[in-house]
Length: 401
Image 1 (cartoon, rainbow, N blue to C red):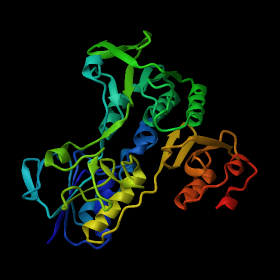
Image 2: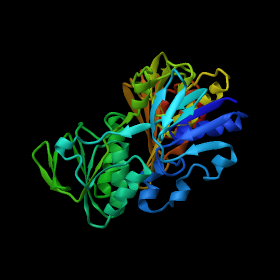
Image 3: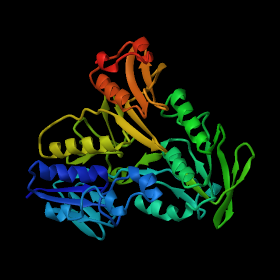
Image 4: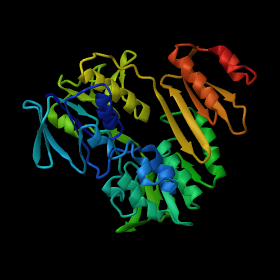
């Protein structure tokens, strides 16, 4: 009987083992995760769960009974120490697990502040796993002062929760503007004004010099010489693919675990999917950090582990929730040279359409699901509507399909 072992019990790992069973795989399936709870959703951690609006059980992707009921051997709270690819053995928790095929869905790890600038002080938090959020939750008491380092989506979502909780929030972004790495100035401006309207102090073009405190953080010195009194700090400076295990196994690494279009690594018996994997895309290679990619890619890998030989065609889309605004993003804006702003049909709703020349690349839609859905279909269909038509709010977007 064939044995498939999956290392990493996040969204990708859970989707992969479920797809194996749903597709009729009748061999042995083992899913290994480092955390003590069954696979769960991560996006609500920094939003509904941190706000106290969601119980932990509602985070679970499937009931705990799903795994034994479907013949999936779920190993929780277990770290994989090594992979012996020659003998096809995973070494975890002091024992060996033989495999016929292996999938790495190890996800990503948050970047942390260096110890030299106070990154290991008590009260300095990252937002990645359930344990991280449980540790920081008691910090969210009214009138406390929080410093958020990093103006990407994670930092902004944390700022929104803190502001809604009544905290005094300062966010510092070393780049010239928030969201500079991932969005156009138009999107940055929209969210800057949104956060300012909720009392968040956003400081751009200024970095963190050092955190102050003995044992626990009590303050921060910024690169412009400003000092702040703080009660705790949230670090949102990005994530890195979790490739240490793959590297130690001798697999090729290229901005993540390098795979072919079907999810195979440089070892034909080892596959990878999710945040940790990079794959071919439009003549290049990308790695996507999103729930939709984790699900879709993992399901393709499951099919290919069963011998189907299907290439993965990514359809990138993302989202972010901040206050009462849902941002939905379709496509990838890499290489854009102009942005068209289209007002929505409700107060506060708008969309930003990214073009490279006359080619539509991506759409950022804030509280404008219609613009998002139509933009997504246009991009996936390879269609690029006229920019003048897009900018005209009287244009019926459906007619552009």
